[in-house]
Length: 244
Length: 300
Ligand SMILES: Nc1ncnc2c1ncn2[C@@H]1O[C@H](COP(=O)(O)OP(=O)(O)OP(=O)(O)O)[C@@H](O)[C@H]1O
Ligand SMILES: [Mg+2]
Image (cartoon, rainbow over all chains, first blue to last red; front, side, top):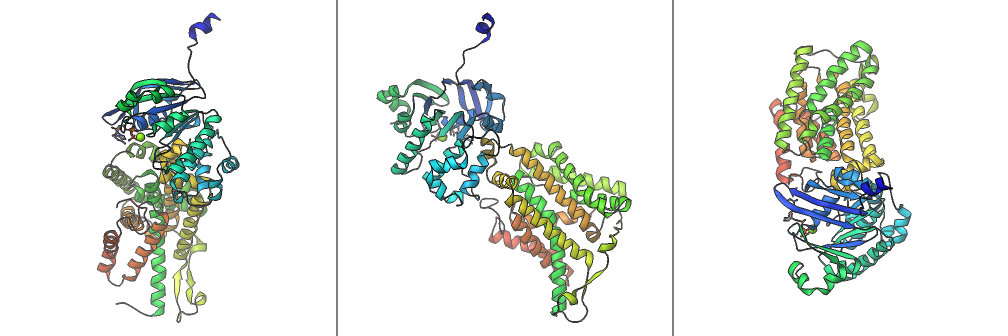
């Protein structure tokens, strides 16, 4: 009992500690630390160039920006020692800001590619019953999809993996308001599934509707942590860091 | 001078096809390696050189069947070793660095082979079933009189067609192929999806090398077995890759045949036949910098 008490460090489902990451010489993630309890959604906000995408890419263990120090823990596993593909196999899924649909292959191939490495999540039938639009276009060349459909495919592709931490980088970017509503409905469903999520969005209000907590970063550093409601209520804070 | 008879035309067509076949086999490996790993591998001609020397040696000692099995296998392993031991350290370096180091490696391999086997051509004994000629006029009734073509050269053409088809089938009809094609488009995204793409690219390097092995076993008797053959083939094969479009397989096939034909149809003038391939390269690059079937954005 006492051994457990001494050695067992209370740890969140997701936790990152003092992350520092660089694009070459440029220091883009500066000592970022935060925790997320299982099943919660966190909105990561900040101005253009604040380092939101860089933070997500660092957590997803991309090679660039290069993580120089810090720790990333997910579900008790040390992600900071892993390669990109290993982090993905252990539950991190990054839905990139430009969606990164693989061109030259079909919609269905894009889903297949998410199911190559174990452990996998949704099967294709489940994807198609949730997203009938993708079912209709399964044999279509993937880059011929509309922006909204590509966003759908990008999220669906992440769900095809056994995702423990979903990183959404600007899911509403460049989409018409009706399409944004459609993607919002889709993300509400993902939320009901209880997947721990970090959402980055220019559209702060939309992100905060979905999120439980909010983190604001500025020039690579965290400047605010609180509930989503606190940000919605604090006009001055939003004006200072989000320009809204 | 230029002979317009149907027989001469037909023979030049065949010769062009046969020359193109070797270019295609070598360019296929080059373009696969460039398309996946982004590495310009100037040592690819040296891999062909290793293959023909291995082929001639194994053929003499153990027969053609063993050469056919062993040479591509050894080349595959050699390719993997080369990728792990050297090439992987140059992925993130400029193309000029890659060219310098692989070119250097090519020279080293060439000189080593010259040291072991000597500078002279080594005769390659074609197996008995591949010897002799094909009576073309019996197959193609429109030919006038008596027209023959060496059987081995036709075999080379067939081997090239089979190899190209096999590579296309692998890339388009298998999951491995899907991963490779997708990886050529966006290798980072595949890693985000949990795929260890670098391991698969290493296998592709091995495959490119294996194809050079197949080329060596069947091409050796045609290109001859001497130390400068590697460099002689490297330049046209590299230009084939450039004309076809860096990283494009169908481009390499198209450009390989094109260059083979162009050389064959200008063979009546040695000067013209030497410069024709550069001429075509210049024209294609001026009109279409990415090559005939190259992906948008590459070298554009
Ligand atoms: N590939 C790169 N190479 C070098 N610097 C980069 C690269 N990508 C981003 N940066 C720099 O890193 C900093 C943080 O960029 P990042 O993309 O993380 O910002 P962001 O908060 O996602 O912005 P946005 O809202 O515009 O997407 C910026 O100064 C940016 O110029
Ligand atoms: Mg961004």
